[in-house]
Image (cartoon, rainbow, N blue to C red):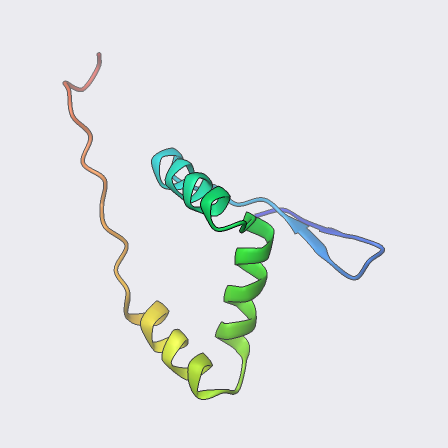
Length: 77
């Protein structure tokens, strides 16, 4: 992960996201007028907050198991 300090008190970071998952997010983001930046900001605020919503969100995230993608085809092709 790369961090760069910005003048506007934000940090630029690099994360890697599964292409298929990101493509699905882009479609839903366009439909709901939601950018990845806004989504991440909202998620982080919920995760670190002190509200009952934050507590529930933390529990949901902490207990969620990311599905493993199964690749099709032969190895070495």
